[in-house]
Length: 367
Image (cartoon, rainbow, N blue to C red; front, side, top):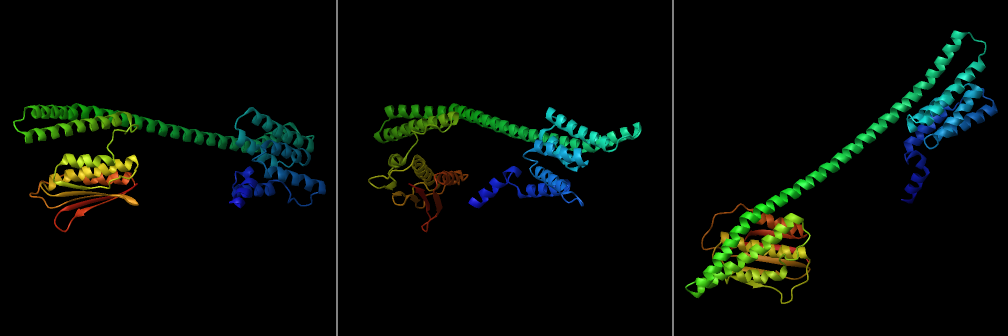
């Protein structure tokens, strides 16, 4: 890792890319003139300095442009100035400094050409000026075009990212509105029915002709009231998000749930319940609740046992025997919901029939 970081630091002028360094090295050797035959020692030194300037052209384009003017003025060698003009235009686009650098390089090349070949007639002179200007215009236009293309690509990418962010915001807003709409519908339909059921059960408790009917009505009223309380909590979550689940059921509420279900359910729990996270406690409670509901629906009258065991994991097992009569099979959403809830808590769920024809639900949850 240290070697990689050192290499990236050394290649920071080339954006840490080895291939860019190799490209600039090839450009420097090709356009600097160091391989020119029969060059004087001072010319070789000049070409070498220009080659170094071309090698760092990405980092110092202005230095490269200034260095490339010297061989144009002294030796009428424009190749390095073509690369320098292209590099500067590619980096700065149509900025005023690009025009100044371009005019300076073109003027130097035209002037050096006129000085080197004096005494020409008007037409050859104009032709020489035009050809020299065109030779410098081509790399400048290429650099300007690539700069504009890069700016367009960057602008397009920013617009796409902005559009994606806006779409995500609109999607989140639509989800929030849909959740609020669902909450309103649930409140208007289910809460109203549950309230009516609770009121009627309360009236039946007061006017029951025997004690057994009164007790059954009271159980119905208590469960209706608790269902309303849980429903209001879920509706608040739908409206405002999962910010407050303090009223959600926990592991300690399993005993009350079993008691309310009836005498046909046996419960085995540790005297001292383990300390668990909120998600684990809610998952354990919902598994027992859904398993008891399924047992009452699919195996009415069957004996049911609920076992809560503490260890490295919290294990919750609900087992029911074969029922007195089989009811119609449901859509299967209960088991799917249990699997999803247990998976969200980081646990595992096993469900399946038992040897005696009953059914077993076993959840293992992290404490």
